[in-house]
Length: 427
Image (cartoon, rainbow, N blue to C red; front, side, top):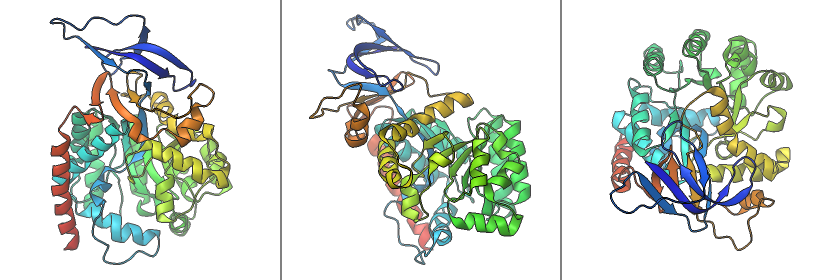
């Protein structure tokens, strides 16, 4: 089917040039867009043409999330931890490591469906996820992939390998990566963080990534404790350890957070092709600090770290928090917001072609032009303006309603699984 968006004001996501246009959207993983003067008639029995009248609304490329945790979806409103955490290590121990140990297959599926729903309605059509469920690992990546496919969003997945739960979960995690990647799944080899990963697991993870032509996806120096443990256990700092193991030689590698780095580590990252993903709101929530990413790399993209499913919100937080730390401007916030597309293209992953689009019902009280778009991006446009979403040429959200699956069913399932998860956490 060919989709036509007529009467659109198209914003080129790279040049920021705005033009009035009719847009032909081709379907498929390699589909694109073109501008046309006329729109075919949709009358009669021809069902191969679909026309949406944008009525002068803005159309631009859809969004991507560079680092997500779908397993946190059912955590909203969850019971208080058995002990109030006093530092980052205790946040992991008493909150997130307690949550992930309780997850079963149905909870994982419900988390993925609800997360994909929220992402789609917020204009996100590509999700890079980092999953953990140490006592329900086998098949978990396929469960997530199937849920994302049902909603209609593209994905790049991995499992969070770690030694923290012993040999069984470690080996199961390696086997899950091998099964998923060997079967054609698009993903990374995921690791939790240096302080929970022994030398043997790190070595085997790098080898597995090399085997499947992908990279690592790992949290790096999110808290000072990661560096303290690395110096104590390995007599080196985190980035240097990963680099010496070969993890930064893989251009697909994603380093999450990267807050507590010294000058040598920053230089190492700059000398490699690895990417860094910034998760501002999560860092503020966990009180681990903020980084000057300008000193680290120009390959910085944005994620949510599972805090929410709203990349426009992440971009605004990046701008506001970055001003006192690194003098972040409108252009820097927008570039990092859009760098996920650059990452996907450079690394050869599929699913982020030009036929992923959002229609924005943004009726501003002031004029939006080529010259002032970035001011509107930071201070005006938000997820409530996302009206219609097109993923690989197919309409997945229309008039703010998901079209590929039943929203009410997804959310009812999520609430049921949320209650089940919370009951397990109380045991």
